Image (tube, rainbow, N blue to C red; front, side, top):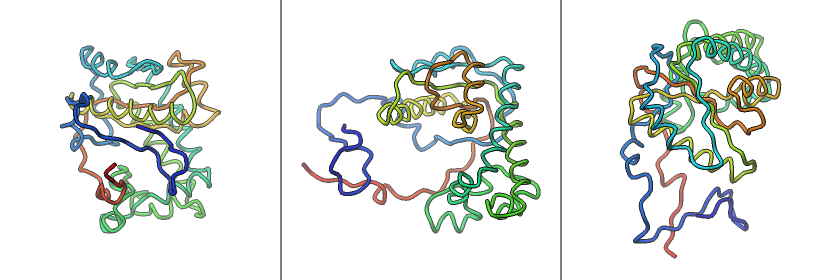
Length: 254
């Protein structure tokens, strides 16, 4: 596998060579791929069994670390940080313009475009659901209400979690970030096999003003944070609409 190959005529993240006889990795996780869902719902507060935590931690390779938090008071403290970070992200009009670009305001639009996340999938309720096109429009006067909605949802979501996990790396750069995505995917697939809901919520580790406090609360000062994840138990959502593999990957014989 070659990451970010040079000389590619179009944006290419990786080139993968397949050959007979190679040892299969992660075979036990394959069957979980169609079932994996990012679960944005509020969870029921139940904790994670120690044996399940051990299985999740076992997915983390060298150069990466998984910091765990399941104390209720500590989770509530991080929930407050997440609230302020979510509000700040919505009020950042440049960032909100990007977020708005992948929001879909109905199943028909999602099916037509084959991507994005619908308002229903974002678990937005109340007036914000009906007026999402204004609440989250960076050019709208109603944006401040969207920020308040996002902050409350983030805080309530974190408070409902049975545990939080912070994935960090001891290395930086594009390769480290890309491999970190692979680490998280294995983590998420293992969580799926264990019936554990998972939801990465990253505003508070993406913003300088909040990152340091989050790292300190997890005892991860000096490490590069990649994912902040809510864990718990909730009804699994329906699958999102996505493009077929042929639209996002190309194959050739060597």
